[in-house]
Image (cartoon, rainbow, N blue to C red; front, side, top):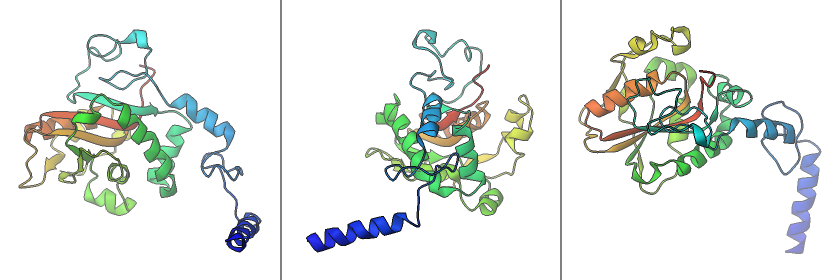
Length: 247
């Protein structure tokens, strides 16, 4: 046993001469104890993660900024999903990590982004009443080009003994990238873009939609609308980050 322990120690020491951990944000070398980020980037990430936010729109607010329904920033917005939970706000370095993850094929980022999402899920008011975890789908062509759906990668790995992963919600129409569409045009861009697979019944079920970023809420709204038309009782949103904090 001592021989095996000594051998393992020598191998680790030998390996450290050739392999190092590098920060996934700034690429500087990190300590052996941290495989993801350097201390400086961890500190910056901490400022992106949120403790209190509006459960109607997801924007960060103080505990004193809550209204009976939502917050002052969203009280006049049309929101079709029943509640939302988020890990953080969409600003660097969280925003940079999300872009690298889904557009730079940096799937090694999945474990840490999943950890952020899992913790947000466990804190959500709807954690104990969800029946299905459903990723916001990509149109087949975009999924083929990217090689994966980032929301599905996270959704499949979220842990909740009371829920099931469900992939029967699909995108049936190709749409313009939401970032290229005006604020007013985003809802129209997505009209009729989603559907439930033939033969699947969401009637009476509580759905948790998974997406990476909520910007205007148009995508979550259209998804919630379609799922409720298919019989879903409640539709919640769970996202990594919420943009639009300045509004």
